[in-house]
Image: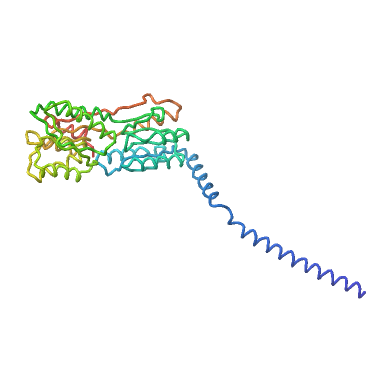
Length: 354
């Protein structure tokens, strides 16, 4: 009996020890698991997040678009252009749109590379400079990203983009220079205020004037300098010519804001300008306030540059999504020049930007 009792007690102790051991093992295993849990890498978490975002975009049915533009504060034209794009590329219209802005080509190229890495469906581009885009457009093509140019052309093989909706900047320049030549001045002494150098707008608007001045003995470029689309810089350029005592009778400014700056310098110096006055003033873009200056005969000429390209881009994207090639590879915006002697209030209301 004593032996039996002893055996029973030994069994109870053994079971008790086994239970403790099991509990300790469980605690150790749980602790180890808890310690090991955070070893999921940050990269895996980031990838999972990307996949979740991609799934959200796909499930929402939105078309992912990256839009690269110049600074909206550059000019009234650019503000209108940016507003037109933002009104079109909304979730309500079926788009998931991201925007990037710069007046510098290298910064725009970096933005394009980022959009490509983010796997946008379409890259919409208004290039700061015509050159330097081949590599990034090739990268886009390799990644299956479709590129559409707007506002400005670039020096790249047309096979690298789907379509371009642009202004004919060379025609804008030629129309303006032809108008100036039609004024039949005895001599043309021109202050030429240029936009951002290398941009399609600058090249087109400068090219026609350079060609004419080189061909005609009575055409002289008194001063030729970039004001980078900026009114204050344009004012400084004209003021420097006034201070030098050089004779001039034409201001050829490559956008309205620079023309405004030039006029501020003329006003400060008491120099008359406009129809029948000492200095002919020419601008581009057709801001409403600029056309009103023509109507008041304070300016002489304004060349139109149409900023409303968004509906054309939307139509092209819809065709591409349906598996159709765009009807036209290049769409040229309809534009004209306005003369202060013939412009009407209806013209200002219809064509004025802003």
